[in-house]
Length: 419
Image (cartoon, rainbow, N blue to C red; front, side):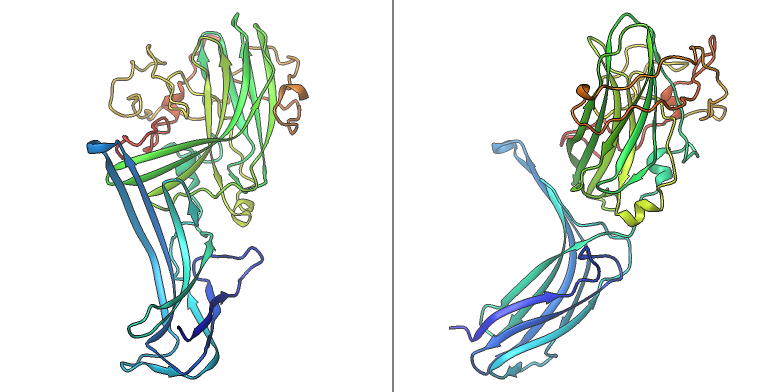
């Protein structure tokens, strides 16, 4: 019978949330009771952080497994000192204090997903010769202090961070949208305003979705998972109408933070604003968002995004829309191997088109969703001032010329995609 009883590891929190970050100190106690004098080799305590992914594809002879692992840090301390002969501990209760420091550096936050996880663990182990060791471990919640580079997340290669502008125009359907800011924390409210001009004979409905995309990477392949966290639907817009709609979406309080600094797991968020048109490709605009701890979101709260109108047909979207079958703007139909093959914008293409004048009447009746038209009651109906779109007779810039495709194609999903 083992002489070791009640082997237990405890640690002290450093804040009210019980989280730890780079550079924090882990202090605690290893407690156990011995029923007799016992020789031990080590009483070891260690902290470590690891990321792992694993999934399989196919079946039978065609089954193939993918896995990857990353070690972020490992620190340890032997609480009884080093001795080749071991150390004899007397009978009775023992309490060993420890103090370990998490290294500085850029490390991802804790995460648990279907095909992978990022885990930070604190472990204590008592070892004896020719005996099974006694162990206890505790998972610690790690929150990274790093913040995504918003200029790359929102406007890659554009040089514009606070305002991104473009115009969707196909036939007689046009739409533009604006989001109040870039960074949010769980529980925050996201505000979006969309202006829709439906000069066609078709009816349409505006929809707003908060999307989460998780990508696992291993051995040159990826496995993607997409999830809709929140969706709101407006009432039908009649033909030959121009309306301004406003929507407020609450970020779920249990939403995990954006994961951007792990090379084998990433978590991204997008606000998708689109029109549901029967028997037609839906106009779509995507807003990349970041969800971060409240302390980091507060520093970005005063930075607004928009107006950010929808892209041209065939622009990369989160719903795997097919590429266009006709040229968009001055560019030919896509033929390249990249995302729809669009070229990078030229040096004379500018992001700001605020000089264009609105060809529609400025006194159009404001439009808002009725409370019965939504799946959630948090939508309000302000009548914001909407920026002008473009002057009649002038050719608006295409969306893809203003927003080049990011390296990680949002429309690609599935485990066969090669990174």
